[in-house]
Length: 214
Image (cartoon, rainbow, N blue to C red; front, side, top):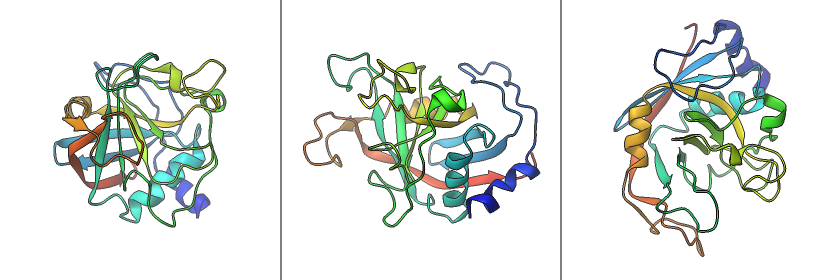
C-alpha cells in the first residue's frame, strides 16, 4: 500500500523553492507532494517530501485519503508558558485523529532527521510518537525552530532518536500561530500527565486534502 501511495510523487514532481517571506524553510527537495489541512480557523498549506521521508509521507497521505483526519483536531499546544521546567521550552501544535492515535492503525518505521536531512525548523511537520517505531496517525507542526527534537546525542528525548520530519508549512503559519495560542489545561490529558498543554476547545480539522499535480 505504501508503494501505491508513493506513486503520487510521480504526479507531484516540483522544484521546491521557498515562498516569499516564508521563515524557517527546510532543505530544498526534488520531489514534493502538496497537501492542505483545512481547520475551523483556516487552511494550512504543506509540502511533503517523499524523497527524504518516504514512509512518513506515505502514511500521512494514506490516512488523509482514507478520511481518517476528517473531524479530527489539533488538541495540544506546547509553549514556553506550559512546557516542563528545566529544559529549553518548545513551541508546537499537535493534532490528527486523537492523542492515542487511531485504534488499529499500523505503526510505521522511524525516519530520523540524521538520515532524512530535515530538521524541526519553524513550520516543519513531524510524526508524534512514544517509542521509536510507534508513530501512527498523530503529527505536530513547529511554531518555532527547535533542533532539540532532531535525532542525535544531547537532544531533548533521552532515546536520541528524535522525531520524523516529513514536510513543511508553506502557507498558513498565521493559522498555526492562532492554534498555538489557544487556551490550554490538563483536561483531556493522559493519566499522570503533568503539563497543561491540552486545548480547552480543540481546533477542528475539517479535512486533509492531498493536492495532486501542483
